[in-house]
Length: 194
Ligand code: ZN
Image 1: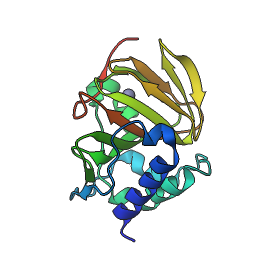
Image 2: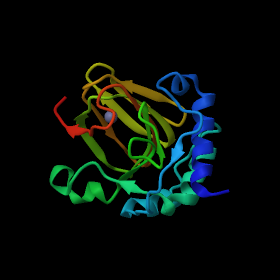
Image 3: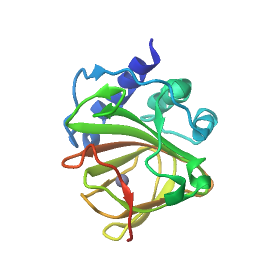
Image 4: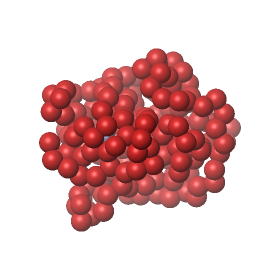
């Protein structure tokens, strides 16, 4: 099967099987595919080789991501001036579904993000509401409203509109499936304070 269709199938499978994801946004049945050229980043090498453990629910999507990582259009929200070059070498995301995704949809955005081991993704905010669902690895998630908690595969956390949040990885990288909904869907995250 075409790698992108396989990615869609596994993302759809994950969302349909987890009520917390299925009910979060407006998940389409058959979104239209859009041509996005392959765009790799230094972190893609890590994504392919990462041994970060998944769980039974997340392993199929993770396997597809690893198998087709080089074919995807990887992006970064930040510049080296904002987060440093070392951070950028261990970070990247793919918009699976959304206004600019591999599959187009206006109501909900879905992306897969990667953060390497030993990284601090400092306080940031965005207007859209968000749910992070851990696919593989682990990280400490922080917000003033929810406190700090280490999340592992199959666990999740939601963020309200403009709720400052931060992530810190330790010995393992973190790979998440995230959904955005509401106003600011096409907007971007920006660094903030707690
Ligand atoms: Zn966020």
